[in-house]
Length: 395
Image 1: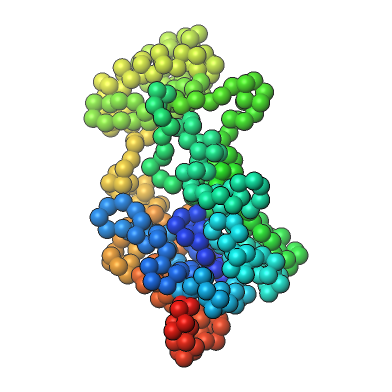
Image 2 (image 1 turned 180 degrees about the vertical axis):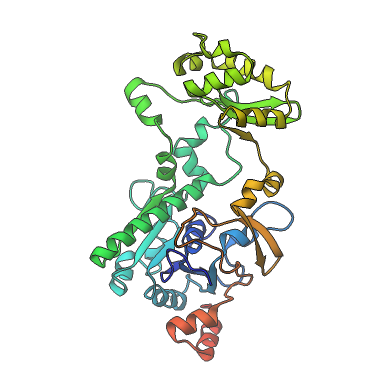
């Protein structure tokens, strides 16, 4: 069976919805043994999230995980999970700050049991500060971190992306923090807390938004499909669809002008430099749109390839599944799931040459599906013990 870079590490995932579970997915894809703790009964709400009549997003975010049930709202469940965490290398949680402490699972208690434990804590505002105790979902972090304000058309209210980018960014930074903490633990033997806030994770990818204001008083505004001053870089209309061109470097612009049969535009003072193209961005987009409207997507794609200009089609899922590059790199794989049979989904990324990531097991279809296996293997609990815990409402 294929393993991965994190093979041999055990992760306990207490998170729900997306930030915690996506961090667990990333670690699991890289080979870690991820044990997902779900509340008895309905389990993680992610089981019924997603688009379409049948909710299949769970099959992605819960792959490479084993499911156990535990009721963290009662003492018996808290004690059970504390014992489980004592066997782990990494703990993931994304509850509102103070919740773990209320349950008797504060970092100092867990580190007393397990000094090498790395605790990844994901929350809206972080574990400290005046807003720490507020509830916070991904969209709130996107708003506070500056993302929402700059997304959308200038004459409309802020828009959102079609995915929960705030949650997945926070999960990714949480994962990066875990990997850094593992490196430190190799030298010191000591674990630590990784504090990943939604709004800070969004802020981290906001490029020059803060220093631009601090230095020059510039405030970025909503600009639709363009980045102000970065041209040409937009989606352009063709006879039969839309096509993305990014020729916003001087040498690329010269090549695009040649591809258009308008070589003189490459040296035209209005467009010859990055700053000049930025000042004349809308006029330039109109010129390019007028040209692309005379071509099919296939013809434009062939020209961009010939002139080595960064460009590409705007894909939906059907185009991804049909594309030979996706197929050659196995960017999309087929997984035999427990609920839906064969299901296509994104592979595990990034690709590691010596210790490749992989999907080793499908998402668990039942809450607590691995109770006997995990609680028996790690805590030595037998059938009678589990029956007693179930009778007490702990699992």
